Length: 363
Image 1 (cartoon, rainbow, N blue to C red):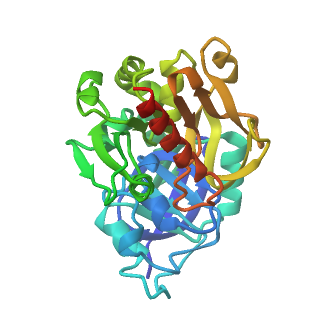
Image 2 (cartoon, rainbow, N blue to C red; image 1 turned 180 degrees about the vertical axis):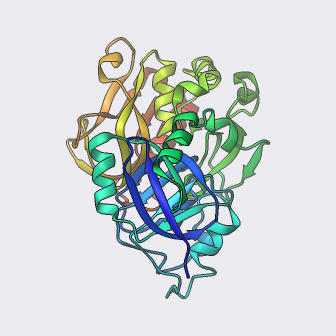
């Protein structure tokens, strides 16, 4: 008989379900994701480090896990909470089940949960601490554990590469240094497809070492946590601005904004999923985007910088993109590599290539 599990929120609410995945207790931040597909990419996205993700799509696990679809090979997600888990996938690409992967990486799972009610609770009251534990733990004991537990910080330093890595393009046009804050594999693949050979460096690589690699452009990747935890990288970016074209994605967008003097703040429940409408302020076009973040750049703070807003979220008006034309710097809060997600924003890679080509011509 399957083991029963309980989710206790720090406001005292409880949700019961059935265990799958790793058999352990976990205190983590609880969030939700509105994607209809892509649970493998979500599970392996480093931006979910230390978080329990509630999947709003009701059936998870039905197409298994494919070897080519991982976004990292060391998932840092704490837990996955689903309405219905399917352990008999039907997919010719499937190499193993979701549960077997979760057990291997110590990821806790809870199925049979009223994910609609749980998502509404997160939406109404915000992301917060949650304890995932056995069903026989009392509410009083669970609340004591929650109050005593502190959520981990400095996630970027834990997920970033420890050494320099290279991803060579077969037809090299440009050399890109990618600062790894928790990069997704598809970000590198999209650059390789466009003739960019990528050198992936640790998040705390100093500006002189990056310049010594003689890149045509620099990309600051996505990643988990509070951008102010990576203050060392913010200072590095200040030293790099104006030297080569710089492209920031998700956390990279926040870090670039901080480097220019803007500020960031934590959203009530964040943006997670492949269906967020964003207006491109330069074209007027509405783009459906894939997102995964808890923090946003303050619009008011941009008024005191050299950055110009380029994209706005139509759901809550938050900043989704900025640029500084003079420095050939731009960034977006969403994920143009879209794994999973819509392809509306793939053009941003071409814009990055155009900036590198322009910079090379003017060198």
